[in-house]
Amino acid sequence: MAVTAADVRELRDRTGAGMMDCKRALEETGGDFDQAIALLRERGIMKGAKRADRVAAEGAVGVYVHHDKRMAAMVELNCETDFVARTDEFQELARNLAMQIGAKSPLYIRREDVPAAVIEHERHIQKAVAEGEGKPPQAVEKIVEGRLGKWFEEVCLVEQPYIRDESRKVQDLVDDVVARLGEKISIRRYVRYRVGESLD
Image (cartoon, rainbow, N blue to C red; front, side, top):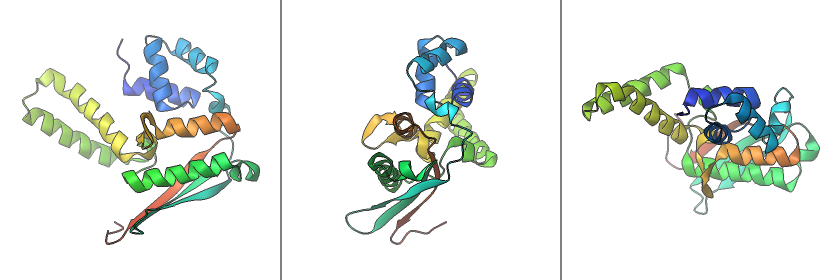
């Protein structure tokens, strides 16, 4: 059974686990949600889900300045307690996220942040491209969904491949730290500057 993006999103909403963890769990269980949830629990990946409703009001600002001093990025990373915010692991995560933002210039933090009009515009473009390539009409929708998924990986920070290990997503990196530190961690906002670039 093919695992769809909608299935992955639903499992993520139900468990709080990372997108790639949800996708892998669904693939390994043939799309069975109950078995996928059990698999995530066995692996300890759902720990963050229990914390999803907690308030993450503490945190730190991660900063990355490129060696040529022509580009910099800052990210606000939140957690629940000042104790966790001061740990080396949390501080390192904030720095790594700032470096990711500097290197990959995401437009949004997560898929849910992308305005519906922007998604529809991209869908329209990808449909026109697929039709222009002469793809069979019955395959166009599937092709468009696949290309939209790739587009989300480019423009959404948490879906981007992590620059230090492209086999993993940025969300996987955050989820690992959540599991180890035992607190909700969320990326609140970020900014990236490059000399000569517009802020628009």
